[in-house]
Length: 154
Image (cartoon, rainbow, N blue to C red):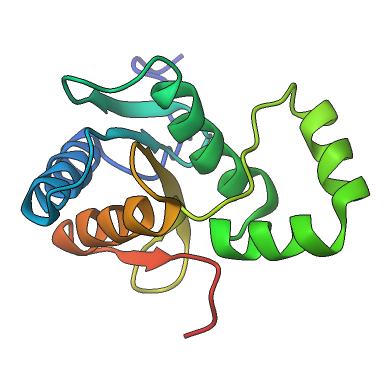
């Protein structure tokens, strides 16, 4: 067996995840937002980076994780998740049950794509209004040279 094992593609590198998280937090500071928590998931929906600013309230890491996880679970950004939650509450209740409550269908969960459109992972941010959280995620993803997919058509 090869060591390390081969054949695994986890999307985002640790360097890219750190870049996204650091740039997202810097954008939040530039905007004067409330303290933020950033979660970056890789292609397997596993945590690659989790940063929680001083002063964040208790459940911010779980909410940020849920925003990113929801985007990965259904394959589109939080804005589309929010639209579907409004139109199909029964489906979103089922999704919540199936995911053990881990999917949070609101803006602030953003897919990370490469230039060819391949999903590399997702970013979830929590701490301020969902739209402001999302803006920080988009800024972080752009700073890493990747493409943000918020769930809104371009």
